Image (cartoon, rainbow, N blue to C red):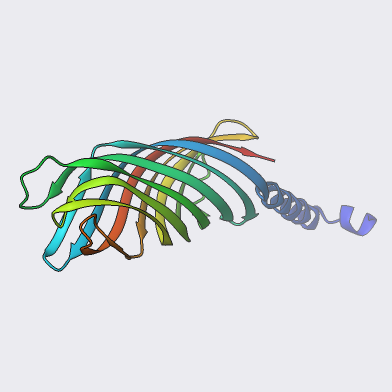
Length: 211
């Protein structure tokens, strides 16, 4: 100990390293969060006669997640969410009124990287892979008739956002998420084969608590 105390520069370096390690360790740990969202969506219904593009009114989304921050900006999380939108228009030559709704329930495993800005604001980028349960409720008109179906398929998402540190435990955040699914084969009410693929974009606002 006397050896260290007699060498102030060395002691200062050790104190600095210890403080840095403690700060990095403090960045690690479990967290929980939730968010609400405004969502836009689109589904492409492909069939022998072409593709009917379903556009939706602005809808809502909700999500909850649990994660672990490893330090050095990297964290992983599990996220459950829902997205709900009503049909606004289907691009088709049929003049009958469009209608229906689509809901997507999702489960994602996300990897997120926080960009250190040495401030209360932390931008982040991420990606997720998982599954989506997509429900088409009386979507019309697709290939001349109605699609009423639900299915589960692989899904992915891209994430970009920024968080604001409120205090030592709480963060607020806002982010953009783009979700897409694999293609699913179904039939409309007339028995016409249809392949559907779903996409959604959302602006999310939420809170996160660190433990």
